[in-house]
Length: 104
Image (cartoon, rainbow, N blue to C red):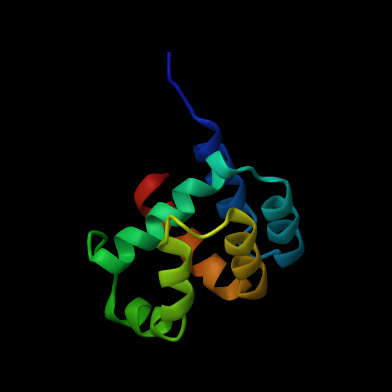
């Protein structure tokens, strides 16, 4: 029997709908902390260098450096993190793409 957690299911939903911004925003509003923790941990691991990403991806994420730092903080409220992702949907799409390559 294969165990699939809800955060993996949400990441799969995010990854399947990566091009549709309306669906991503809707999924962001209905997801809970447990489902979004995988995205926040991904931000932390990107900043620490634990996830190998290409130079072009690093250059793209450089303009979202402040947002990545804010998303990786454990003391930041979940609602404010979700608002950061909603405002920067392109950052969210990039994170989903990076996370999908390593987790799915």
